Image (cartoon, rainbow, N blue to C red; front, side, top):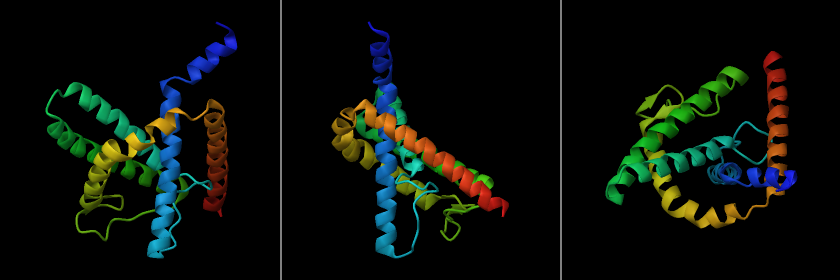
Length: 186
């Protein structure tokens, strides 16, 4: 096989699929939060990046895919019980990711992007039982409805689009980091 074909074959593998999932769900998360902000009129801006993606949604979606795949392959239980277990495991994992993301944003950029301390069952700014339950419900909806609807589209994304999105994303991350660090120093 020609060297260029080997490179393209490696790029098109499973990693490319999950990278495409990351981008699609990051972009959908951005639009979801933007629409919710317009509806509620709170002026909230989704995510810390300048572009039209909110990486925590992409990371969350890929995490849900990995965790659910692992659980469904290894539990060997009735699908109902596998789904119940997945609900709790993913809810806890996503809440942990949300807390980690919130702490990192606060430590690196000096900004608090969300604060659940007004909710009854919160732990600090970034975790609440109410949101943990939302993440659990959202993960079940994601696995059984959203991802099956988008899976075929994700698999058809051309390599050049993924490479372009990766370059734009990395440029956005770099520019955001430089801009935010400059603002923190002021």
